[in-house]
Image 1 (cartoon, rainbow, N blue to C red):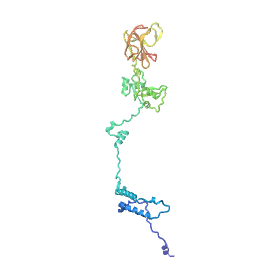
Image 2: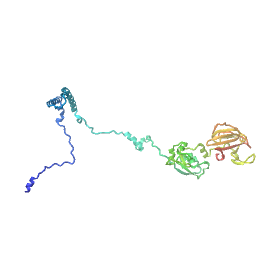
Image 3: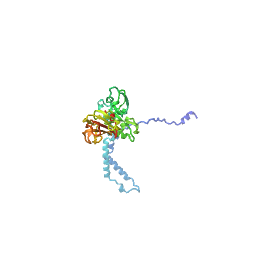
Image 4: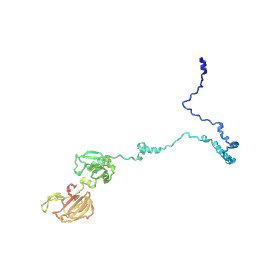
Length: 387
């Protein structure tokens, strides 16, 4: 067998066109003239003829033995014509309008309105510096940062006063006195080193049973302010702990006492007998004298040493005519051997108000004022409090 006959018997398959890797996008089919005129094919007259023709063909087909009765298969020609005419009318109107695809035209571009004002308001709230310069004064105020106590040191110079030092550093006189535990401002000398807080307030030593809330309520400040000022990580405090109470003030009595103004001289004169033990002027027996005796001419006005209220007046065989005043912070004062009394019980008096006159009534050796100061019922030396 030669090569030509072998080749001639081979079946050569027709060459197939290679399939594309990406399926081609089908092109939209243009509407033909026949498709454009499709409503005409369903004109009312023609559709009716087609309908009756199909009905006639249906009559020529023999009905099966199991078919339903002929009465149920009969359709009224008039009803069918009316239904067909209605369908044709709807389709004709729909075709005249061009259909959904012909009448709807999507917008070339969708636009969304942007509200600029709300964006500006949000930007100014988060970052006030992003707003316009003219709106800086009308923006939303941001909360101030919490203040923490810091202390600096100042050395007292000649001629300094506590009030001027406090004013120079922008703090209250109460803060300066309380921070340094000053009990008598008259003892401050040049060269004294003072601690100067950056906040106005006072120092409070925690007592047993106290909490941050109770301390805050006592001084009328917020508990959060106390925690921030003292840089406390929790509200747990212990007895003996010192807390700085921002914004708190000393009582008028405490402030006057620290300034040496708590007690004023009730009368000016020389001392005939000091506070403490002394020989009794009548018996010579050593006894404790709980007052100071101030010698003054009879009839000299006697003034209230402190603000207070008249607790009692009367006459005593030892003290003669007397007046007792009650003052804040459990202080009391006694004025004895008066020649007369000028106030009544229950009267409120101010420091320096007239109470009576110097006399020699009662157990006395001559005109003088017996002046006593008591703190919670215990006698204290008036000279330590008098300014």
